[in-house]
Length: 175
Image (cartoon, rainbow, N blue to C red):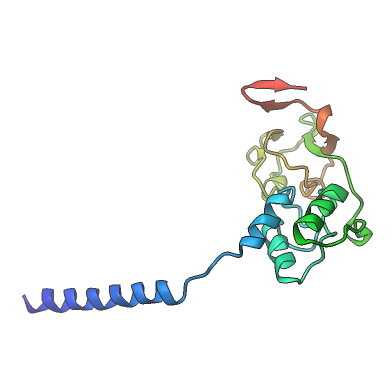
């Protein structure tokens, strides 16, 4: 009986400590970072120098990154960020790459050897396959980040303009 009482007391103290730490050490999201993130293309390519769109948005909100580092978003994204932040638009910084039209990865299944090196390279899991089996891209999930292309040892992955590859949308196939 004494052991149960001691255990109950210990659990009550731990519960109180957890409640106190939740209130005092709460991490508050940056609402400006969320608004900036909503304007970014969500490609997660890392071309901006950050591992994804959310870290880049947070860096912009903290004043650690400039608004013109996103080649996939291009000038349109820079203009939206400038408007949100009350800044003057500026041209895309060429150090981060040129602006490119939206694209989707395409795997030539006749050349795919099933090495599976493209699978971990895809930040959004748009590539389906298994070792020693053919791989394919779920076009509706592909963000066009281009990270799978250098991972392929047989060069069977190419980026195609978004309209050139069929993509499943709304239960039907759109050209």
